[in-house]
Amino acid sequence: MVIYLRAGSELRDRLKPDIDYYTRRVQTEKGKSIKEILTDIGVNPAFVAFIYVEGKIKRLDYIPIDGQSITLQPPVSGG
Image (cartoon, rainbow, N blue to C red; front, top):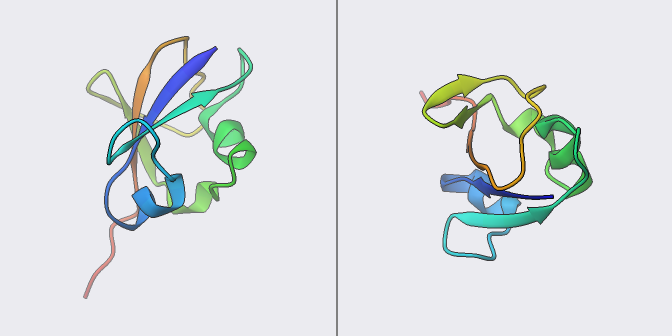
């Protein structure tokens, strides 16, 4: 199955987009969580606080369906 992961800022650099400036197409196995998928593509899940799916906040244990676009949100930082 194919999903689309989107991210901005420093997380975007880790994601290595290939569709456009923010989006990476990922071929993965059905039934895997976002956390597992991130690990598979070499992105440490610790750099993602939560995700947005269809306008709703989800945790990293969310299991996507084919064709979904998922936005990755990094932890808030600053001073």
